[in-house]
Image 1 (cartoon, rainbow, N blue to C red):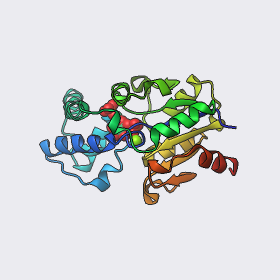
Image 2: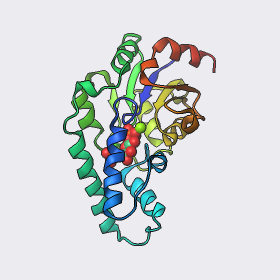
Image 3: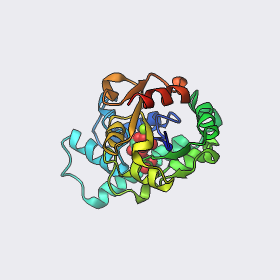
Length: 220
Ligand code: B16
Ligand code: MG
């Protein structure tokens, strides 16, 4: 049986993954480190500071900034991002997501969120989805960013779920690794070439369906 389904936020529930990309791209251009969507895949699900470190390394500039300067760069990216998420509304919930959340609630299965984002509460409120979640992990309390399993394990614990009875839903390679290492059942949404190590892959959120989840999980 399934105790809980644990969701990533950015890229699974809403398309803020695109806004993170645009905000990092803008910061990258400001410091002379341009990058493309392919490199951006390696940032998905990764915390703000770890993402910055990866970008600096990508540009060979990892030794050019002091910790204080890095904090300033990370907060500048967040300013760009926060500006982009102001206009989010209920209309920005990805197709199929709210219906899926309803199915899970009706089945009496717990719903939790394991996002790396410190803006997760703000975004979830804007989307009008707060009432569905039994628990949302506060990213500020997470010590080790995805691909570490910490955030998924925290979410499971908060809703009294055994990791082996949890399904995690992710759009990022780092997130799927985190779910696997938490010994949960990983569902990836997106490209097979990026999420190949998930137990089940859906092309889009339109395919989210509790029956499919239960059937695939039963096969494991
Ligand atoms: P913030 P998720 C992650 O959210 C994003 O995928 C990642 O791109 C971002 O750097 C990270 O949150 C931190 O976000 O700067 O808002 O704290 O995919 O785990 O929901
Ligand atoms: Mg994500």
